[in-house]
Length: 237
Image 1 (spheres, one colour):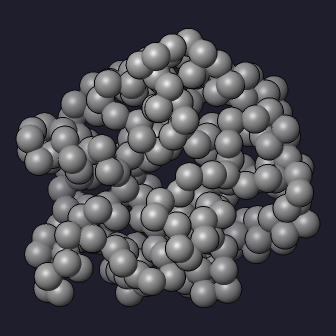
Image 2 (cartoon, rainbow, N blue to C red; image 1 turned 60 degrees about the vertical axis):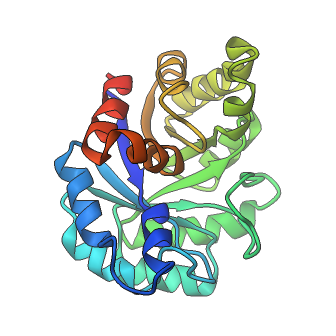
């Protein structure tokens, strides 16, 4: 079964909009775990518009499942991750002005930089995943710099899914094959939802983990958080 990691950025965004602690980020994270999620993902950005840097140590000591921290490996981000040592760090090349992560690393062009960052994280005992667009050469590049996993960007897949699902998923299937041949673990994320998740999971072999936040939180408005987490888990069975 592919593991579900719930991204709680949107919960933090809602909390920050009023300046208090409602909803309680730690309680929501623990509840997601109790409802069956196998991991929690956060993506702190420099402006701290949702996850705050101060949230990480609190989450680290509150969670019982896998903790995944994703973001652009700036000096501040790296210091934060190395101090808190999550189970996994997902490297994402988003700029400070990015509304959301919409492109992956060129692991070939940025090989020297990534090799240094990956080495620092792995020396601290942190599993490293690199966020990439679904191109085989980027999987090969991730392997070359020492990454344990890649996370395939699924935004374009989600956009094209209803028009031609087979064509939309084809590059992801090719990347999955390369990853399996190289011994690189496979994650995926961005705009996966209740409509497209089962198809994606069935078509992309060896999928270890999906990180889902925005769609899951939107669905929770209608179905409730407990039901929604379990609906996503059902899609992954």
